[in-house]
Structure formats: structure tokens, C-alpha cells
Image 1: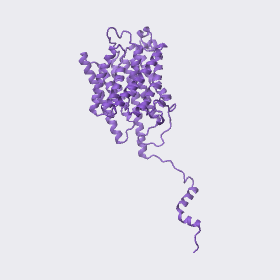
Image 2: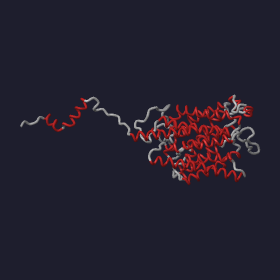
Image 3: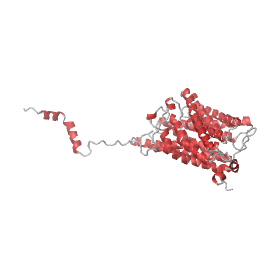
Image 4: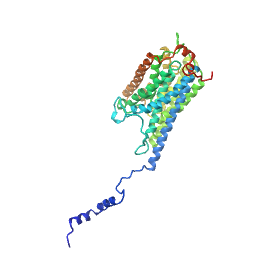
Length: 440
């Protein structure tokens, strides 16, 4: 028998791969890599998680209505249009400026992990993810959720400056806070910056959001000075014109907080996420209830009457206190955190009165003082490193207070901070806007 040639030997031994290679050449597209379609399960989980975050963002956006009702109700009727306009501007300017620059500053990417500052670029990508699945977020819904947080931080200041700040000055403030101050310190934790590397923990923003707004409000109140007639030898009450509006605002904020806290889990599919969201929601409710009750009881014992406004601020104080740690504590610990926040908001309110610092709605006691408590409580009850919690709970508020004090003082020096005495007495609705909230 004739010996096979070398070519025939190779062909006999490797006929299968050679055949497949030939088919790949002959058949159009046979060698091309087809994109892998996500499974039905992955597609459904992706849709549910993104819908969950979108609805949470809508709830947080609705909190703007709560702030508008609370702040206008706790102030004089002659300043209602001014307060409502500031809330509208916070929402509009906040969403725009955070889109242009804030989001890129707050989430600069892994290259800036552990750093103080970074920038990913202007705007937000419109492209969807390459591999949709549970827990994977579309960049657009992630931006939307974060943008309404930024607007919330700015709105906190609105009530603290009520009745005496020029509208143009307020517009400058809200652009600076949402475009620079909030995103930079937010990056330190949520954007992977130096506080995150230190293991500082703030689940939904007791420090990152609320303390930033609260300490910016304190800086504004100090630079502005008190309303005419607020202080003499002692603090003189200046009652709000509509406590019904104020109470409605608190209930709206309470509802909105169930977007703020549970939404910060960022996903609801999967047993672990579902369980976490349920615990977060109940902890949020328990802390709010405990804060409202303790503030009411303390004000009743000391003032001899149950104080509605203090009870309302106690609810908000409990919500602020639990925001950093709602995923890390038990139900009973949530009650303790909320109850302590209710006492803190009463004490901080009385302290501001002693210092003759005028904060008409209690923005600093609620969001500043109780925001810091939330950060510290995360170390006490949540099991996170206490040293990191102390550093983060001091560093971010100090950043917000110092930077915004400089901004407000600069505006004061340039004459765009405080209205004249005549305008203040007349009311900012007519002098700043030429409108009246009640038609007369």
C-alpha cells in the first residue's frame, strides 16, 4: 500500500477543525460573534430595579412640595410667594446645574478613588448598560435620583433665610451649592473619595445631604442676622401664618422619605435587596414616630403645653437621624435613634434662641444637629468604625459651613444678601415679586 503523503496525514488527523474553518469561510457570518442577549430573568430584574429607583426619585422630588408647604406655613403670609419661588428655583436650577457639572464632580470614576476631588466630565451619558441585569442601573435614572437629592440639600436653606434674603442672592447660593459644594463633599463618600476609603458610612445622607443643607443654613442665618423684632432682651415668638400648610408639609416629607431611604438600596430584586428595603422602610417609620413623640413630650414638660411645631420638627429630626443608618440597625435601635433626635432638635432650637440666631423653620436643628447625630449613631449602633464616623460627621459639615459662610459673606459685601428694612416690613412677596399669595 502506498504510504500517505504528509498532507494526507494532516488531513486525516485534523479533518474536523479544518472542516469547521472551511465552513466559517464559506458561510456568511459563520465566524462572527453574535451579541449575547440578556436572559428573560436578567431583563425583568433590570426593568424592576430601574423602575424602583425611578419611583423612589419621584418620591424624593415630591419632597419639594413638602418643604414648600412647611416653610411657607411656618412664616409670615407676606413672604409666601417668595418662599414658594425659592423652592421652585431650587428644583429647576438644582436639576440643571447638577446635570451640567454636579454629577460629574460627585461621581468622577475609579481613577479618583480615595481622592479629595475629581471630575468625570460634563453632562450624563444617555447610553444604556452593555449587560442589563438586576442591580445594573441606567445612567439616566441614576442621575435623576441623585439630582433630586442635590435639590433637597439646597431647599433646606430656604426656610432658614425666610423673610429677609434677596432673591438674586438666593439664586446665586443655590447654583453654587448644587453645582459645587454638595457634589464635592458628596464625592468624598458616595463617589469613592477619601472618606469612603476611610470606611465612613452614610447610607442615604444624614451627613452627605442633610448636614450639608443644615450647616449651610446656619451660615446663612448668622450672616443675614435675625428678622426685625425677633430678639430683644429675649426671643420673641413670630408665629407662622398657616400651621395647616406646615403640618401638610411634614406629612408630605414623611411620605417622600420612603423614596429617600429605601430608594438608596438602589435595587429591590433578589432576596437580600428585598429584605433590606423592608427593614429600611420600617426603621424609617419608627424613627420618625419616636422623634415626633419625644419632641412633643419634652416641649410639653418644659413649656407646659404640647407644641405642634416642635412635634412636627421632631418627626423630621427622627427621619434625618435614621437616614445614615437605616440599613444597619434594628427596629429598637431605630426607635432610640429617632427618640434622641427628637430631644436634640428641641435642645438645638433653644440654643439658637440663646445665641440670637434666627432660623424660622428650625433648618439647622433638624438637618444640621440631627444630621450629625445620624452620622455618629451609625458608629454607635450600626457597627461601623467610630473613628471614621466622627471624622466624616465633622469634616463634611465643616466644609459646608465654611465654604457657604464665605459665599454668603461675599454676597453681603456686594449688597445682594439682605433686603432693606422697609422691604422686610412690607414683605418680600410684593417687594421682590410684585405678587401676593392671597390676592390682597
